[in-house]
Image 1 (cartoon, one colour):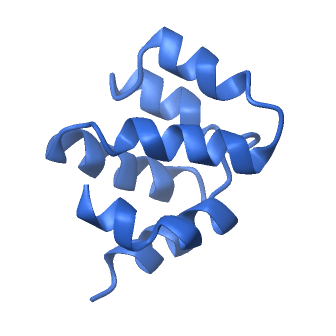
Image 2 (cartoon, rainbow, N blue to C red):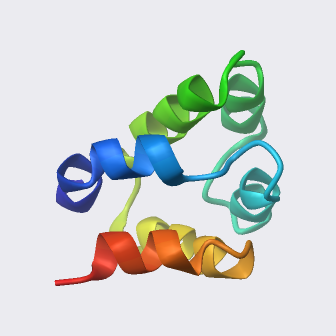
Length: 87
């Protein structure tokens, strides 16, 4: 997905996966499977978790990416959403 590729470094360095509830929200919205969620959580560092999530998101549909954007907003990461959707 072009947006992820274009904003990859920004997302790696700024997105909060570990303690934000983002993964739970993406699982609840059927963006991530149980296996995908566990794979991300098994990563040792926040950077590696972000990297794993971005790799998975890059393979998702446009609708699933929109759900990811909504999940960012719902997990107090509106600034991340704004950073990747700003023109």
